[in-house]
Amino acid sequence: MAQHDDNVVWHAHPVTRQARERLHGHAGAVVWFTGLSGSGKSTLAGALEHELHALGVSTYLLDGDNLRHGLCRDLGFGDDDRRENIRRVGEVANLMADAGLVVLTAFISPHRAERQMVRELVGEARFREVFVNTPLTVCESRDPKGLYKKARAGKLAHFTGVDAAYEAPENPALNLNGEQLVTNLTTQVLDLLRRDDII
Image (cartoon, rainbow, N blue to C red; front, side):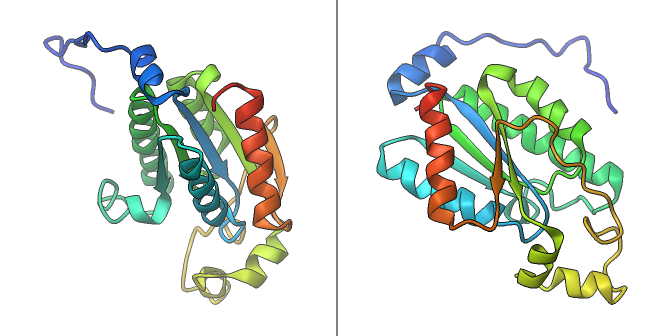
C-alpha cells in the first residue's frame, strides 16, 4: 500500500462536522448493512432511505453494484480487490458522514477485518453495523441476479456463501431476521437511529 508523501498535510477547514450537523438537524452516521447476496440488504437500505427522506433526514445510499460502475470499476473480486473495494467505500462513507449525512451502505463485506477497518475509520460513535441475517437457502432461492445459479454451475468463482466464506458479525448493532417483511425491518433500524440520537 502506498505511503503518504511527507509533503501531504491534512488541511483543517473552518466549517466543522458539528456545524454541518446543526445545519442538517441530525447527526452524521454510517449504517453498514452486511449479509449474503440476496439477503435483502439493498432492498432494506432503499426502503430505509425512502423513510428517512420523508422525515427530512439528509441521506446517501452507497450500493455495492453501483460503486463498481464508477469508483471501484477497476477492481475485481479477489481478496485484495474486495478489501480495497471496502476501504474505498469506507473512506467515502466517512467523508459523507463528516458532511453530516446519514450514509447507508449495502455491501456483502464478508470479512470481519474489513468491517472493523471501516468501524475504526468512521469511529464507534458514528458507525452502526446491521446484519441482515438471512439463511443461505433463502438467499439462494431468491437469487435476484442469478449469481448462485452461476456459482453452483462453476461459472462464477469465489462467490460468498458457495465457495468463499462469510464471517457473520459477532456483535452488530442490529441482527435482523432477513425473512421478515421489509417494513418491519425498516422500523427496527429507524428505532435504532432514534434510540442512539442519530435522528
